Image 1 (cartoon, helix red, strand yellow):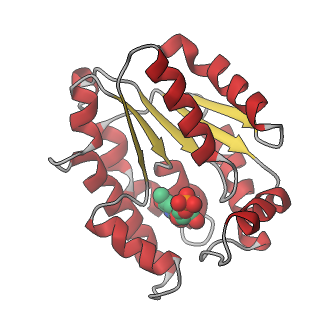
Image 2: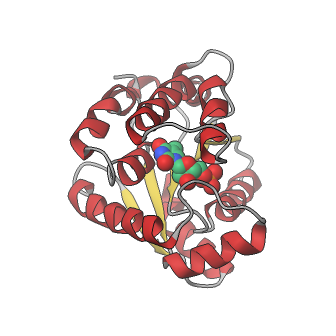
Length: 210
Ligand code: TMP
């Protein structure tokens, strides 16, 4: 467990595709920067070698079964955490705050919904034991609204961007949050509200960390 060496705050943003995570990460980053502190914004799949491979599956350029994808997402997470170039762990150790778009709850919710949740949890144990997020921020949005936002932002849909899949993923997220709320700090935000209200609710929930 490396939590003792961690000096920066580690915030992860979760939600179904189109939930507005990217917008809110920028809003929160700007708010923290205003306090004169340093932030590192990142995402999963990461920009590393395994994350780049995963983007090919998500766009439909390559195909693989769900178990293979589940294992690749977990491997990307460990590399994202521990790689010596720009790994999350190294940033936190330097006192930089890390804002990460998706973390292990995404693996649980997206692949746990179609493979075995226990198995996906085991795949993530190494990452979970390495660093515990200070807070998981789950932005909860209705799948219909999320898909409208996805359609407004780009012409193609990624692998999981169907109403059926996103509804299943959202239900899995909500059940998981209920199950994990004693072990993890998880903030549930109503993402169906206007952007500034969503931001205010998130900041109210995390401002005491800064
Ligand atoms: P995003 O860049 O829009 O967040 O899309 C990333 C996609 O990858 C999204 O559909 C969710 C999916 N994903 C998983 O299925 N499992 C994971 O562990 C992660 C990190 C992402």
